[in-house]
Image (cartoon, rainbow, N blue to C red; front, top):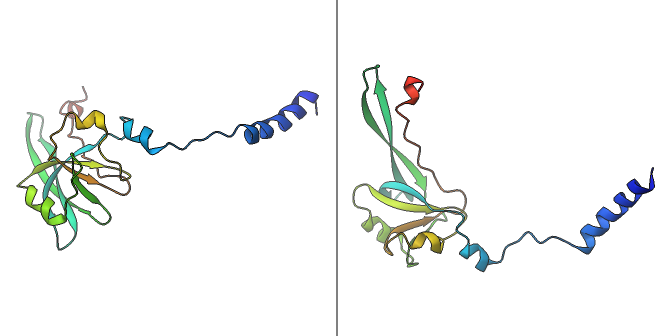
Length: 153
């Protein structure tokens, strides 16, 4: 082994011990970061008996080549186990209180990993908007199909 390789094999572990890299974030910098933007979803209802949020989603169905289409509505239940319910202003809500605020299809916000809505996004929202803080990854809105995709454009 050459002296350079021996030095590299010795110095690398020594550098890691002497200068450890801290990858953790303190909570204040995570709160100030505009990362983890909230997801906008469409809630149809909250089923308190089943402890689930019922989300509405739409898919555009194209018929033939004449451009005829319609929107197909689907409903999906998502467990509210360990989900925190709040307003953008930070007021904690019970399932019953959140249920009373959902009237028909209502736009809600969902965040992942129990993070609240960062300040950069709170400025865009009203304080009484509903926020569902999921313990892991929040559900996602399925993208509406691009009408030009079917034509190969």
